[in-house]
Length: 92
Image (cartoon, rainbow, N blue to C red):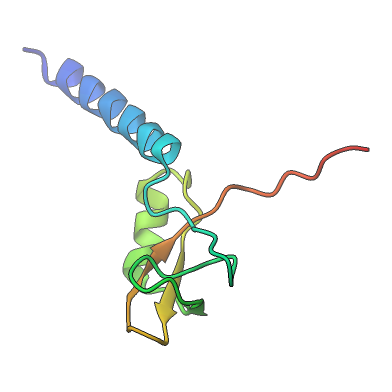
């Protein structure tokens, strides 16, 4: 099989999988009764922290489809990335 064709098919499969992950909502911010961004483990409010260098690299590798931010839970210690849909104001 041609190496170019193999790379092209792999790239297309990668981009399709990124859009499927976004459609499914994997690692998306979750709203709870008490906050707009809750911990996936204990449902407490998450606090924003500074991104790591690997987070910036991940942002570029995913073609900037996800605008993920790093959060930590002050209740249980969970730390990770969460992303949200872009805000689109409605016209009235």
